[in-house]
Length: 146
Image 1 (tube, one colour):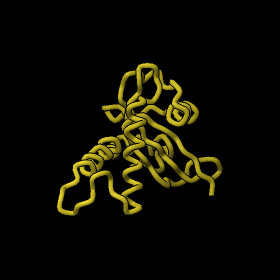
Image 2: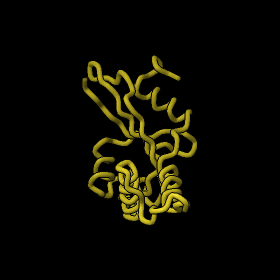
Image 3: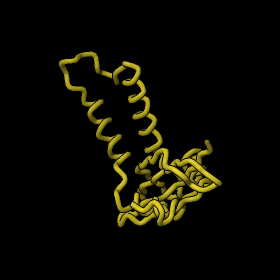
Image 4: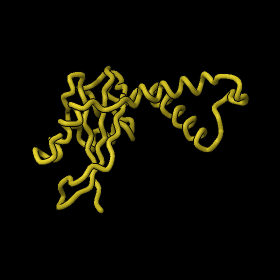
């Protein structure tokens, strides 16, 4: 099975802007200033992973949606990188049965864990239906319109 992926920036009005794979990978993985058009703003990015048949999208495998802060030069904001690493580390620790710092007592509400859950949901909101519809139309045309 062959897989493909695309990136879309979702605007406040649920319109979508397709971002090249190279630009987004340079931005997100290499921390290069490749998204200058969004400098100084927070953007919502949908990552769509799909199966391919005859080099065309066939079926959606997964859609991830995240809120990303772009610094003044067009690179990923360093504070968000640090925050994301901390959140992921705490989530992995929780999965492995290790709590975040200060989680020794079951009788005490762990504010760090509650804060992390809230922060994670802020950085990973739900993809709005109208934006999803536009993404599906872009990928599949009218044949898969919602």
